Image (cartoon, rainbow, N blue to C red; front, top):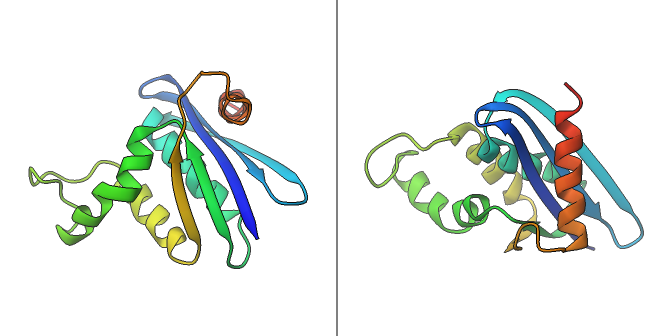
Length: 142
Protein backbone atom coordinates (compact mmCIF):
# COMPACT_ATOMS: atom_id res chain seq x y z
CA UNK A 1 0.00 0.00 0.00
CA UNK A 2 1.42 3.39 -1.01
CA UNK A 3 0.48 6.41 1.10
CA UNK A 4 1.15 10.08 0.36
CA UNK A 5 1.46 12.53 3.23
CA UNK A 6 1.66 16.32 2.97
CA UNK A 7 2.88 18.02 6.14
CA UNK A 8 3.39 21.57 7.34
CA UNK A 9 4.11 23.52 10.48
CA UNK A 10 3.19 27.09 11.39
CA UNK A 11 4.05 29.48 14.18
CA UNK A 12 2.71 32.88 15.31
CA UNK A 13 5.96 34.32 16.54
CA UNK A 14 9.10 32.21 16.61
CA UNK A 15 8.94 31.05 19.34
CA UNK A 16 5.22 31.41 19.86
CA UNK A 17 1.94 29.58 19.41
CA UNK A 18 2.41 26.77 16.92
CA UNK A 19 0.36 24.44 14.82
CA UNK A 20 1.07 21.36 12.76
CA UNK A 21 -0.99 19.70 10.08
CA UNK A 22 -0.94 16.73 7.77
CA UNK A 23 -3.02 15.53 4.86
CA UNK A 24 -2.75 11.74 4.63
CA UNK A 25 -3.82 10.27 1.30
CA UNK A 26 -4.54 6.54 1.37
CA UNK A 27 -5.41 4.65 -1.82
CA UNK A 28 -9.09 4.56 -0.79
CA UNK A 29 -9.57 7.77 1.26
CA UNK A 30 -7.99 10.84 2.88
CA UNK A 31 -7.49 11.85 6.49
CA UNK A 32 -6.63 15.27 7.92
CA UNK A 33 -4.91 15.75 11.28
CA UNK A 34 -3.70 18.86 13.06
CA UNK A 35 -2.74 20.09 16.50
CA UNK A 36 -1.45 22.91 18.70
CA UNK A 37 1.67 23.51 20.79
CA UNK A 38 2.44 26.58 22.88
CA UNK A 39 5.79 28.34 23.12
CA UNK A 40 7.33 26.48 20.20
CA UNK A 41 9.14 27.14 16.92
CA UNK A 42 8.28 26.69 13.28
CA UNK A 43 10.97 24.00 12.90
CA UNK A 44 9.54 22.00 15.80
CA UNK A 45 6.09 22.19 14.19
CA UNK A 46 7.47 20.96 10.85
CA UNK A 47 8.99 17.96 12.63
CA UNK A 48 5.89 17.31 14.74
CA UNK A 49 3.65 17.28 11.66
CA UNK A 50 5.72 14.44 10.17
CA UNK A 51 5.87 12.60 13.51
CA UNK A 52 2.11 12.77 14.04
CA UNK A 53 1.45 11.62 10.48
CA UNK A 54 3.78 8.64 10.83
CA UNK A 55 2.25 7.78 14.21
CA UNK A 56 -1.09 7.52 12.40
CA UNK A 57 0.25 4.71 10.19
CA UNK A 58 -0.71 1.15 11.06
CA UNK A 59 1.36 -1.81 9.94
CA UNK A 60 4.09 -1.61 7.37
CA UNK A 61 3.52 0.78 4.52
CA UNK A 62 5.33 2.63 1.79
CA UNK A 63 5.01 6.31 2.59
CA UNK A 64 6.04 9.42 0.71
CA UNK A 65 6.15 12.55 2.84
CA UNK A 66 5.96 15.86 1.01
CA UNK A 67 7.25 18.83 2.99
CA UNK A 68 8.04 22.43 2.17
CA UNK A 69 10.68 22.44 4.92
CA UNK A 70 14.25 21.98 3.70
CA UNK A 71 15.20 21.68 7.40
CA UNK A 72 13.02 18.58 7.75
CA UNK A 73 13.85 17.06 4.37
CA UNK A 74 17.62 17.58 4.63
CA UNK A 75 17.73 16.74 8.32
CA UNK A 76 16.07 13.33 8.01
CA UNK A 77 17.74 12.29 4.74
CA UNK A 78 21.26 13.62 5.25
CA UNK A 79 22.25 15.35 8.48
CA UNK A 80 20.78 12.78 10.87
CA UNK A 81 23.33 10.11 9.97
CA UNK A 82 26.23 12.22 11.25
CA UNK A 83 24.25 13.43 14.25
CA UNK A 84 23.73 9.82 15.34
CA UNK A 85 27.40 8.96 14.76
CA UNK A 86 28.43 12.04 16.79
CA UNK A 87 26.11 11.31 19.72
CA UNK A 88 23.60 13.99 18.66
CA UNK A 89 26.21 16.71 18.26
CA UNK A 90 26.66 18.95 15.23
CA UNK A 91 29.93 19.17 13.31
CA UNK A 92 30.77 22.16 15.54
CA UNK A 93 30.25 19.95 18.64
CA UNK A 94 27.03 21.69 19.70
CA UNK A 95 23.89 19.85 20.73
CA UNK A 96 21.55 19.16 17.81
CA UNK A 97 18.51 21.42 18.09
CA UNK A 98 15.23 19.55 18.45
CA UNK A 99 17.07 16.27 19.08
CA UNK A 100 14.05 14.91 20.99
CA UNK A 101 11.90 15.21 17.87
CA UNK A 102 14.61 14.02 15.48
CA UNK A 103 14.99 10.86 17.60
CA UNK A 104 11.22 10.23 17.55
CA UNK A 105 11.10 10.74 13.79
CA UNK A 106 14.05 8.40 13.28
CA UNK A 107 12.41 5.67 15.41
CA UNK A 108 9.13 5.96 13.49
CA UNK A 109 10.92 5.75 10.14
CA UNK A 110 12.51 2.39 11.02
CA UNK A 111 9.31 0.37 10.56
CA UNK A 112 8.16 2.15 7.43
CA UNK A 113 9.61 2.65 3.97
CA UNK A 114 9.62 6.45 3.89
CA UNK A 115 10.59 8.63 0.95
CA UNK A 116 11.08 12.32 1.74
CA UNK A 117 10.22 14.86 -0.97
CA UNK A 118 10.49 18.62 -0.89
CA UNK A 119 7.85 20.87 -2.46
CA UNK A 120 8.01 24.63 -2.86
CA UNK A 121 5.88 26.44 -0.29
CA UNK A 122 3.00 28.72 -1.29
CA UNK A 123 3.32 27.86 -4.96
CA UNK A 124 -0.28 26.77 -5.53
CA UNK A 125 0.28 23.05 -4.91
CA UNK A 126 -3.21 22.02 -3.66
CA UNK A 127 -2.14 19.35 -1.16
CA UNK A 128 0.69 21.49 0.25
CA UNK A 129 -1.70 24.43 0.57
CA UNK A 130 -4.12 22.15 2.44
CA UNK A 131 -1.36 21.06 4.85
CA UNK A 132 -0.56 24.76 5.43
CA UNK A 133 -4.24 25.44 6.13
CA UNK A 134 -4.37 22.54 8.61
CA UNK A 135 -1.23 23.77 10.42
CA UNK A 136 -2.83 27.19 10.80
CA UNK A 137 -6.05 25.55 12.02
CA UNK A 138 -3.92 23.93 14.71
CA UNK A 139 -2.90 27.34 16.01
CA UNK A 140 -6.59 28.21 16.39
CA UNK A 141 -7.01 25.34 18.87
CA UNK A 142 -5.36 27.50 21.55
